Every structure is written in structure tokens, then in C-alpha cells.
Length: 287
Image (cartoon, rainbow, N blue to C red; front, side):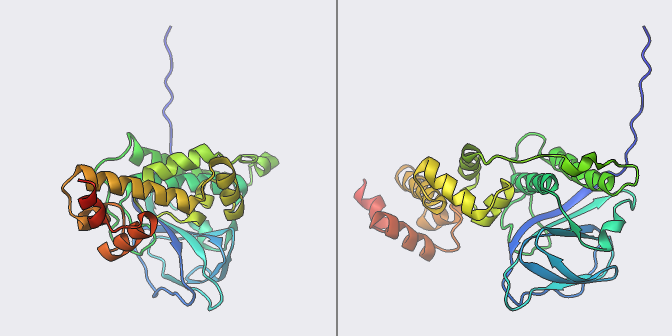
């Protein structure tokens, strides 16, 4: 029997990735007017931004997204009374099918937010921290899970094509209820923390990634584990610090850096607060 193989066409194709950021901006933070040769997805998870761009100038509120076109001049600023949480993803793609997303804010639905959360989560698997500091060159990790780059491309294409379908005149109202609810899995949160606790983890970022709110996440985590999220992360850091102090000859400064502390001063203060002694005293007293 002879089969007829059908070639598959692309509506859009992601060709490159610049960054995947999760920011908690301070009030009064602002960017300069800028343009660059890639698309920039901006989603506000809390608070609001004031956007200024060629296609749209106005508010970008909680739950809204805008995608700045490649080479489009744009900037934003935060008001004095808000500290917004913002996801920014920079990418290149074929065609101009998503250019309409630059003309006005788009309110994301629950299923779409869940897709975006997967992109943020996978971005942590690909890029080195920091994730909450504007940088021009996010570095790739030396070791990443199998297929991470391809998965990111697929997730971003899936997300954007979903928006294209929603705004297509031929799309039915069935898309309105696509995705349903999402049940918080504390086990998944624990697994994620276990993999990333040496990097800076914001509770608001965890809430976004696992499609819940800060209050529910903290309450369920404490109820099911007996720990607060911060307490659990700290316990992981202390345990690893003790292990490194006892089983390696690494300097306290190197251990502090590996655990994600900004300086040996902050690490020493953290360690003493949780153990009662400094890292150096712990190492000497345990020999």
C-alpha cells in the first residue's frame, strides 16, 4: 500500500530567543525609548505599566499583554504607587502574523496564562540567572534538560498560534472555554524548588508558574509540608551549605556564590541566623 505523505506548513516559526525575564519592578522604574530587531512580549501579572510605543500608548494592566513589533520604538514606566510584576520574552519569528498584538492590550485567558507560565518555567531551564535584572545577553546554562531549546520554541509557537486562532474570524466560540481550571500541585512546586533553590526564587513567580495566587500557594504549601516556602528554601540552602563545608575544600566565598548569595557577608549572616554559628566556625568545629 502506498501512502501519500503530506508536507506541513508553518503559520509562524520561532527562529531565535533573546530572553525570558520575570521582573518585580520598583515604583518609578522606567526604560528609555528603544528599538531592537526582535519581538518583545510584555505581560503584567500584577499592577500596571504605562506603555509608550509607535502602535499603542496607554495603560497595560494586570492580566494584559502586548507584543512590540521588531524595530518598533517603545518604552514604559511605573507609577509612584505601584510595584508591578512583569514577564518579558524577547524572540524572533518568521512573518508578521502577530503584528496586530502590538496595537492594543490583550487580556489573557486562564489557559493562555498557563501556557505563558510554562514558557517562563522552561526559560529557567535554559538560561543562567539573574532572571529579574535587565541584561543584554542572557547566558545559556552549560547543562540543560534534553530538548529544552526545542521545547521553548514549541511552547512559544503554541502560545502565539493560540492567540492567532482566538482572534481569527473563522474561530468558533469553543475557544472561550479551552483549558478549564488548574489544580495546584504542591509536589510539583517542591520539585521545582528542589531544582532551582540555589537561584533567586520569588513567591510571586512560583504563583505565576503554577497558575495560582500568592495566598493560596503559601497556604497550601504550609498545610501540606509544614514549612513556609521561604523556610523550605532556606532549609535546602543550609543543608547544602553544611554539606559543602564538610565535604569540600571550597572557600566560604565560593560556596556563597554557588548558593546564589550576593556576597559572603549575606551568606555568613544567613548561615549564622539559621545555625547559630558562622560557616567558618561550623567547618572548624565539625572536623
